[in-house]
Amino acid sequence: DTEVTQTPKHLVMGMTNKKSLKCEQHMGHRAMYWYKQKAKKPPELMFVYSYEKLSINESVPSRFSPECPNSSLLNLHLHALQPEDSALYLCASSQGWGSYNEQFFGPGTRLTVL
Amino acid sequence: GENVGLHLPTLSVQEGDNSIINCAYSNSASDYFIWYKQESGKGPQFIIDIRSNMDKRQGQRVTVLLNKTVKHLSLQIAATQPGDSAVYFCAENPFTGNQFYFGTGTSLTVIP
Image 1 (cartoon, each protein chain N blue to C red):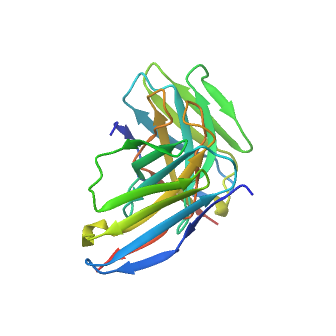
Image 2 (image 1 turned 90 degrees about the vertical axis):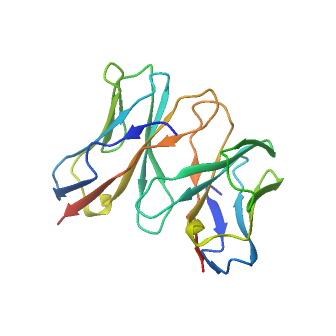
Image 3 (image 1 turned 120 degrees about the vertical axis):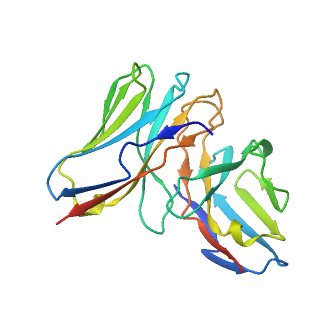
């Protein structure tokens, strides 16, 4: 299995809802990432997990809460989001956290906040 | 984030022609670069990478050139096909970790 899967593909939520995005990989990768991508913009790094520990939080608001239950799974819990949080949320993984590690991306979850 | 920019936001080429997509980066400490292709509705897909100790790397129909003197990266696609139509991003890694900064992207349209 050489892919990163993300569920759901699409998600519509209200500002008072709580939802979660899920990412899974079975390549034995030990680093996993969340990116946010607005329309016609490049992906922006949000969080990095290395060996199931949070390594980087790029000053992301607390209404986004990441979780890495095991080395294959990465979740992003969403609560009290704003309409400007509507975007494509991409998950990626790499074999390790060191340099020269190619990142493999999932197809993304298209999130709309009403 | 780092200033990784592209010279041209859009590029149209005839099918069969060669395409060149350019990228300027600002951090001279960056030592690893990746080109990604992103088709509509999909996540970025790895095309080719290059380390700073190289100035050229070739793949299947693609070549990446790195000019560290002027901090410039380019992606050349030979015999461009309609399936090459997508947005292309360069990404640089200026740190010892695996943290990438993406450029603004170039939208490539191949005209049949």
